[in-house]
Image (cartoon, rainbow over all chains, first blue to last red; front, side):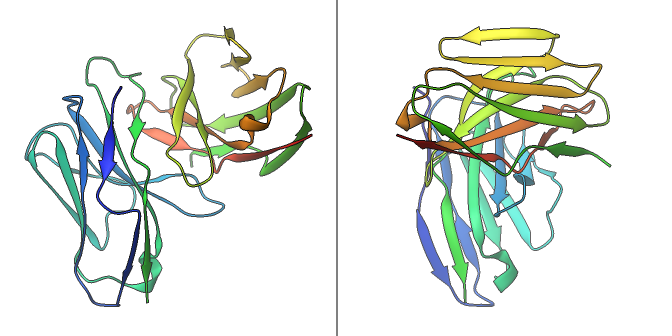
Length: 114
Length: 109
């Protein structure tokens, strides 16, 4: 079974702090993604990566950066957290073998910025 | 713009059948996905449709009409554990996923 593990289920940070969200997958997937999930909205893509050291901006990259130094790990960084970044963050991975490969999600990190 | 519409919430009775609709307008089409998400948990993959018609998988079936920009997820013999949100997502011409806001399904005994 594919496992995508996010390091924290809940985080509380102060405005202006630098925040690191970590995600690790154990199925040797090439593709990794960071989404945020807010009530009443569909999942919104922040950043994605199709290979080590490669990153692409999604729909809402402002205020975020990412790092993929190893294939299994994809980190999301909030350079200076703001209250509007309070949200549920979901990491996902998928195989690159086919475009319709399903996403495998982690359980999410609920981040509160005060 | 690109848009996916689903009902916000639906209620159904244990043992019954429910149909969750999804309509879409996207730049191109490379398939439609349904995911299930229990409260506080990760979304999990249910189905993928790229051709018109009905795909059956146990108690769950998914239907697609590309000409109408329409899909539905059909759940039969509802169980309490089917209480969850159901997310519709369309893969556009750039192979990017566009997500609906999800339908929260409440099952009553």
